Length: 85
Image (tube, rainbow, N blue to C red; front, top):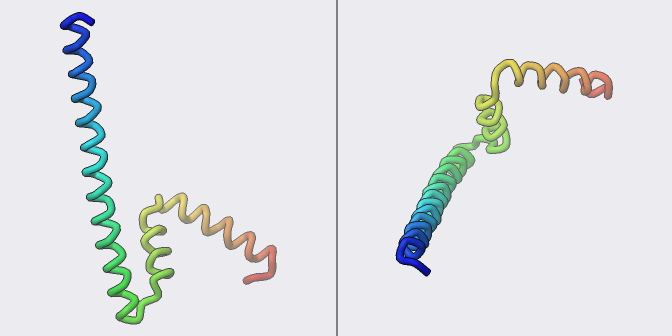
């Protein structure tokens, strides 16, 4: 193996290691944030709020308003067809 190939291999190894370490660090941060979110839901539950409803509201607020309205219309149509409304 030539010196250039060895150097290229070292650079690739260093780059790969850097990528892996960044991913690991981000996954640790993601877990910490997930733990924080769980703590907020636990606090809400302790204050008498329904966490399923809170999660549904958070999901809905993240959606595009037009897509949400379209989905709600379809859902209502299906529920009427099934005699649920």
